[in-house]
Image (cartoon, rainbow, N blue to C red; front, side, top):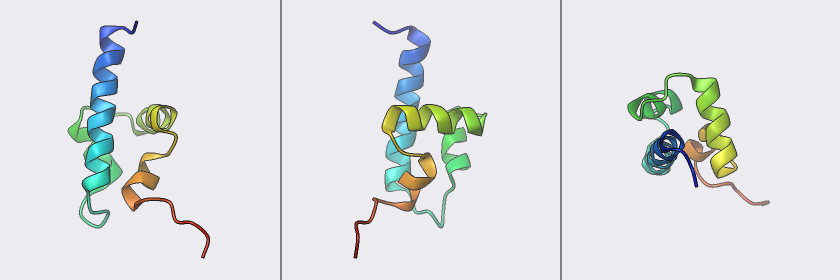
Length: 69
């Protein structure tokens, strides 16, 4: 039900998501991870990432959301 290009994009988005979950924010940036998976337009990447996962890539890289103290 999706185009081959969208399927490819979803595979790359998932790979970027997993890389950000496992990355150290002090060692890697959203840009370096996005570029590793072929995303060159950071604004477009952030929008598609947030649309797919419900969070901005920078929020995922920083770690899980914290609840109230």
